[in-house]
Length: 392
Image 1 (cartoon, helix red, strand yellow):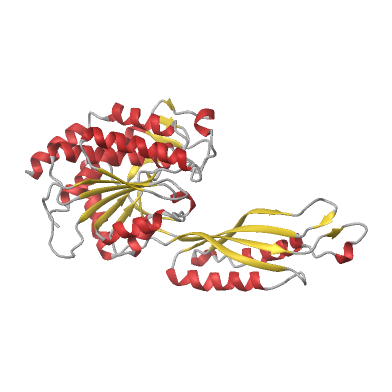
Image 2: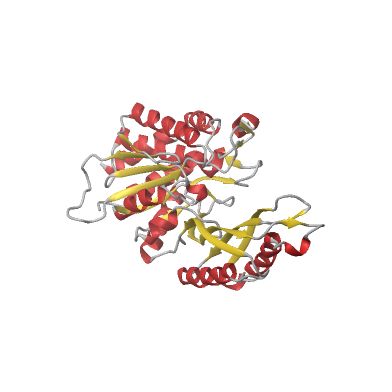
């Protein structure tokens, strides 16, 4: 039964390249920045419409500020374990991008040779399309060794502030997780990622005329500069710890001692224990007044957990690698300094692979691209890996 289903699934997917591109084009040409809830939800509606046409049930989990979570379930009752045993095979991806509103109008989906371009084409709308077609294949031909769940979230690029509880709830029931972030430019997938904390610190000083009453002022920008230097000094490349104050604002006018300033911090780390150590050091810097009279407050705005490879995840990678070789490529398992929702599922104990989506590169830039020739083989590899799991 499974062998017959595999043959049908693989053959059908081999005919779907142009259909995949058509669905991808509509997605890329739809606004979907993380803070554009309306745009992200329009992409969600495209997912729901596709699933409905395939006869796959879809549930919408409303979110207040960001894109709703879309949950598609394919469950024919086969391969289901009893009790509290994890049973779901979870395919995961995010619909939001980093780009501002109107970017698809300025840079619509285009194809040059074997590469497609456009905002979010690889990160990660191609991965969403891949997941949709994998579910459609199993809907047509059966053979899944357990319930298939596809989760399409809407706020990953800003740390999944609303999506994280939904992801963690799914992870608790997941036997395995395939996160369809873009495959590496060399065709590899990601088996380990750094964790990340995104925080903001606000500084209060005191305004004064910078010419006529300079000595009465307390410069928040002066304090900002000192704190940035101290925060950056916490970077420890040997341990994989990096800190970057990537955005700053402040001041009132050029001839006013700055009464306020703000900096935004990106912390990346490898080992879970490093998070508490470095965050305590950051807090100490925020609490210290380098410029007497200033006050500061630190606020965490978003966070990712590291993706670590458990023994079970290593076995899953071995299974995927066999499936990939049967689909025409041999992926390496790589460590990435980038963060993703896969860290949340791994932390919940679900064996997780990341970046199993179609191959692309230069994400978050106007040069972002997708290798169109990878659409079908990467979908076939995920389908084969699912079939190789056997009954749960």
